Image (cartoon, rainbow, N blue to C red; front, side, top):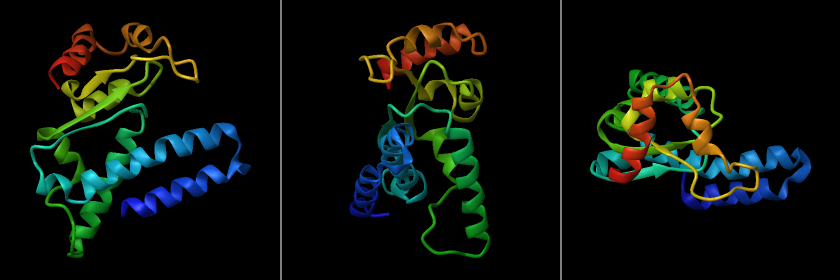
Length: 163
């Protein structure tokens, strides 16, 4: 989707306050990031620029397992009918060897599942500034996660330094 179409869609959503403040914030804040994610992983960007370093920040990571599974599904179904214009690989395969990074918010319940899908070295810790939605304690929340290992938590910091 061309950027001008994404921008127009986002502007329309901002004008549509009928959905309420919570929905409007959730949609208008994350939708541009998702369009970018789709374009990079399914639009052939990483085929043309395989050494590109890219990060998807400030939108959490719980959405990754579902979106990757759906994108892979459509990739394989389109490939089966020889649809032109597909990327060279399934979207999830780019996560294995391309430099694609994410941030997680502290209260994400699917964080262990996300890490299984993307790898421990693709996640960065988030917490550089206060947020309007009271995200001031994200680092503490991640450190208190009992469902991910101490090694994984340390890896978040290493990724920030080395990524």
